[in-house]
Length: 326
View 1 (tube, rainbow, N blue to C red):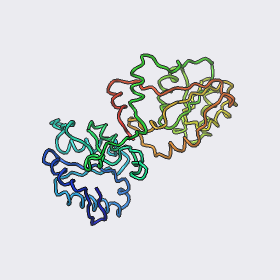
View 2: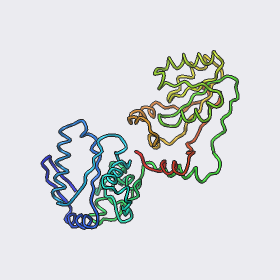
View 3: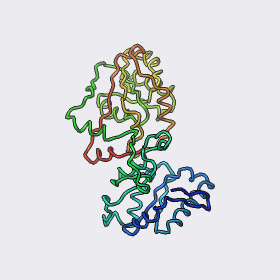
View 4: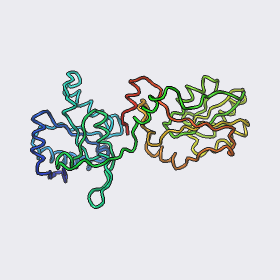
């Protein structure tokens, strides 16, 4: 399906009108789109509206259109647009949506390239959106042209890690204890890896103070704050990303015992945290990845502990973490 121009013409597979009319007669049709660039570009907004108008005019059927223009709860694969649809038509109250006989058609299905036939899909967000809602999924070629189902690849499947934890009755991670009267712990991990959560759950109860660059803003202030805590006899956790581990050079000047805890969380999962927190730009994660060096003992650490990702929560929380968020 294609639409061109702001005034727009629409080109469809020959059988599309019959297919969509049948669907419309049996239920309803709703479009979900993520035109992020239209939010700040009036020309792109006009072009988008023109394309939507061309498609809807060609179909000549009742259609609802939802467009997510920001990086928020409405952007696929998150289900904000679906919830809005249900609320707008009181379907969330009546619970009358037949998910099994509904379906979602989208071109972002995670398909790999086929030499000389098709290019690689730009993402898998449409397939992931359908999975989040609980809808059967089809690509346009599968549904309208009745082509065979193509293999697809998901960059990240959260259920792999949620189910792994559910299948084990004990944690595979080491028990964290405090072996020195006074020491410094550096947490190493990308933004959103769970460093602060680890501190509050495991290290704060052991009496560690916390130094965080998001709060203090500069490394120099972190060193100053850590120095003050050590001088008053309080062990310190440096809760920064510590991608390049330059801080041990400063830390060993304060204290001989410096320990490192590396958060070993799959890179693709970073940013999938459904916690209500400010959304970070992709650059924050790619910048960390480009600077990251695996910490080594000869850099001044007394001990390095690797902590794998584990989800500890209720069944409802595990269900939430099993959704696709990016």
